[in-house]
Amino acid sequence: MLIKLKVRADAKEGSVHKKSDDSYEVCVRAPAEDGRANREALSALAKAMGINVRRLHIVKGATSPSKIVKILGENDGDR
Image 1 (tube, rainbow, N blue to C red):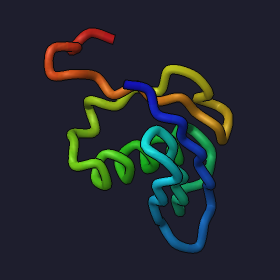
Image 2 (image 1 turned 45 degrees about the vertical axis):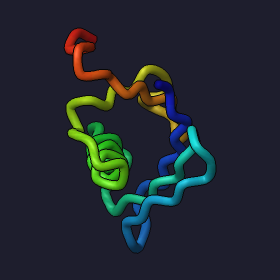
Image 3 (image 1 turned 90 degrees about the horizontal axis):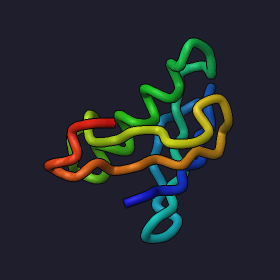
Image 4 (image 1 turned 180 degrees about the vertical axis):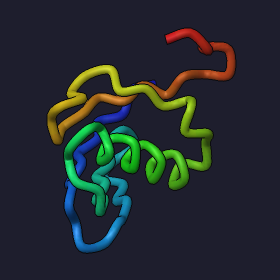
């Protein structure tokens, strides 16, 4: 399953907003450097969805605020 993710780094508060079934907006306090905002965003998204963060993988947009994230299934261990 693919998720559209909009990440806002350097936010005053961390939050996760579900826009639609396959679209989320995540605000993180971490700066957008060295992948810190990406890690915090994936962690927040995983917590909001009730899944393990290791099941989330950024497919597209690792250096952009707009990302495509794949949710790996139970048997999709390889990336």
